[in-house]
Image (cartoon, rainbow, N blue to C red; front, side, top):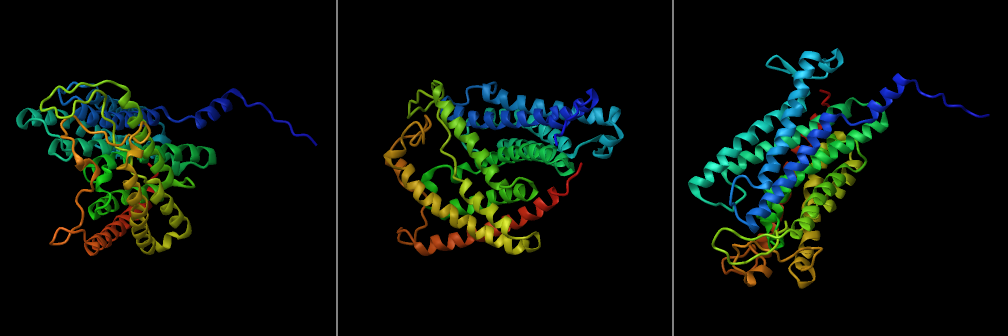
Length: 398
């Protein structure tokens, strides 16, 4: 017996194509998220390779272009939903000040406004106080708030239709959009804490494990609980690592000349980001634990994730740090031993920093172990908040 497939009518074919396509405004927001992450990593490299010679640098323009794309596309969605939206679109929107739009669109608009506000604040800060090389400064924190809000808005833009979808193919497609947005957000968080975590010289001190467990567990767990992919945390971590790796390999291809004194290390190429944290390892364990533990045991699951995250990070990065400080990592793949132009090069490059020492200055295993216990507690608290947050995201429909 043979089966025949009737061709779709024109209307049915158009409906099927529309269902299979990613909404243009979601694609625009994901593109803007990419521009912002790339622009931020490029901007840090610019500071380390050239110096802040002007506000109107290409990285700054790329970041603001990303904000503009997100803000205008989401603004159009809000206006269209308010004045010309179908009853279905209006029912799937959130009302604010008389206007209607998806929750993610409102968050993206707010993030865009914060990013735009941070630009003149950052310019004034540099003019008033000079060049700063610290990531954590008042204007940078305002910028980070706007950037991360925009990334979270992108997650919500994919999350709501994903939670409403009934077709498995559509759910998977939107799930990958959500995972990509979450990966960009995790990438941004790793940049935010990079002063304590990016250098392998820091991977033998307890502070590194406290910072990573407290900050990264939250976002990996929350995004995983809200996702419908099979391995959500692993996918998110892989995307975050992939973005950093791409910039790490691409940026040194371009020449650079320092323009601000003092210049202690005359670099000739763009300084790349450090090799990313191996987050895919603890993320894989998070996925395993979440697959084996039901949603009715979140406190137990949070404890297991907090302890496991620190344990896996310790095992992976303790030995990877030794490799990254060795001559074997000084090549075009791992890009170790790359320093900004203002660094006075010395033997400190191959030493461990901030070690947990006793009163005599000797490394203390007891102090380090105590730090790991504190890191596990922070990881537990972060994971529990992440599960609560993720449970809420799993119910987002608008």
